[in-house]
Image (cartoon, rainbow, N blue to C red; front, side, top):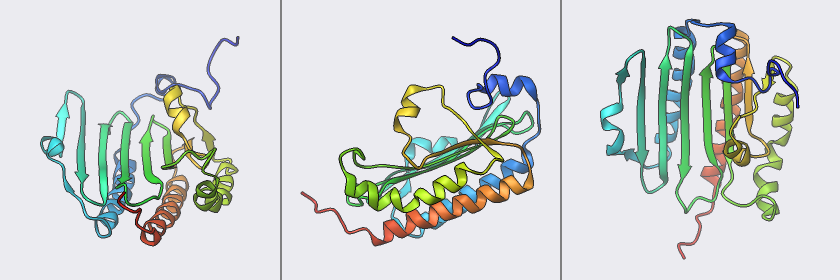
Length: 217
């Protein structure tokens, strides 16, 4: 058993903040929130869903030193859509999410995209499978082999360090092409993440558009 400080891949959020506390993230929040908001609007133009009443009171909220926005949606083509953020922009802790959980008639992986600051940049995105990939090999090849080269290219970018979740549940659900990274706060990192997310999103949206409806029975 090893002791002492965690490696960069396995540090906890408190460890990151102990190294660089109270780092203003307002500008980064603006850039990342704009990206996620644009994706939400583009999905809304493709899939039918409407605001879910459970989040109506939380479109803008504050509690002590924290604030955020929780916007949830549901409909016949998307069972659950989340567009949200929570954090403290002046102290540098942020969690921003955009997730689309598709309806049962669309047999395409779900989409999850997360940006954050801890106060380093954090990024997570995944194409959450709808089937068991170990046994549904054709499904795995169709959706995951097709983006494997992009995954490996991103994993080989030395500006980004793999971030290991401390939760076994999170580690159990990440797909073979899931991204989970920390990186230094810089314009080129933000621009790279924007490009990566755009590539993943457009690929996913093309899958949704081309999906053959699952028979109702």
